[in-house]
Image (tube, rainbow, N blue to C red; front, side, top):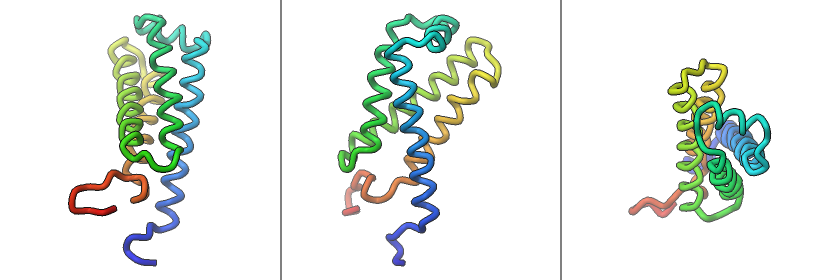
Length: 134
């Protein structure tokens, strides 16, 4: 194995956190789009207008797809950034609403997982940096 070939554990860790994030983003996006009772209760509790569920739902589903589709490195960067903003924003919203860890811990964990997926992603899923053909 050369220096550019990731260890199998690295690859496994990447796919585990990425699949978990993709499933959460896709399911969460669908829940937002169909406005389940659970998500309507959350946005009402936090004080957001219900139409924000449509915006978040569309972008979560699109982000989940972008993370899985081969190629489109720049699109993946945007999906990672958007997911990180969604999850940190959700955690912060719960904190500002006075909620305890039972509400803000899950989005905080998802933010860490999306950061881990970004950090662990293989070279063929990274943007090429000037002076780096990878």
